[in-house]
Length: 134
Image 1: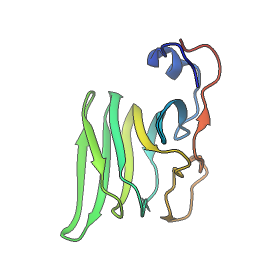
Image 2: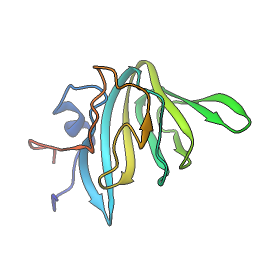
Image 3: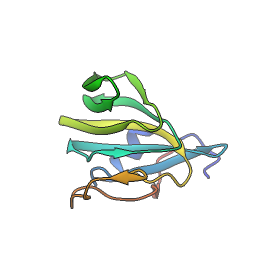
Image 4: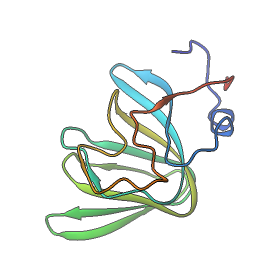
């Protein structure tokens, strides 16, 4: 990992792919990932880990299927939300958003259980950030 500071704005400017997170750094056994998003992701579940979202820019909606029923949380710039492990969820951004995510290294972007992966979603465990984002 990089031993120099990372400028998140420059890091985000270094790629265009949507729903295709880049690993900015690692903290213990966790990846700090950034992603650009627009439209809907897919319904999925992470059975063994929570998923942390911080909206760096834009707006994110996260639909949740909980025991009490389905609901949607809306996050604006600067808002954080953690989806608890085992909760089926679908992130979406009606316009566009830039996100910072914390997940255990090796966690799939489509979880452990999911519906069919649409072509616009990158099923990955994160891509290394390339280029000079410092």
